[in-house]
Length: 85
Image (tube, rainbow, N blue to C red; front, top):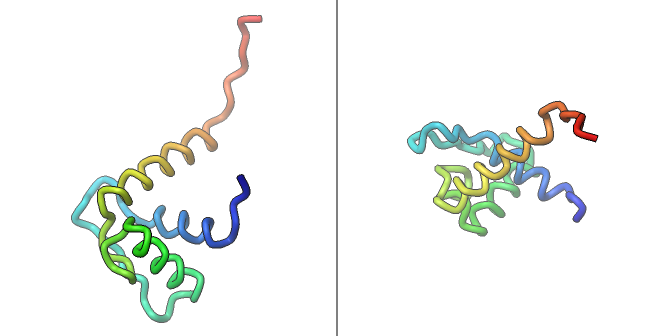
């Protein structure tokens, strides 16, 4: 699976949400890059955020953001060497 620019923009936007509070949303302003504005629209169309310019994470969006946060953690944690061999 390749990561295209649209997917990277969507993941970047998802990473802006604070997962510790469901009461904090985001707003993508009209001065934001067109890539970010388009990413917000796609996330809204997919049912991950509540508004086409940000808003709050939906339940599906929270699940996606949780998974992305875990993946980031896995990929940024130094590898452990297998010393059992």
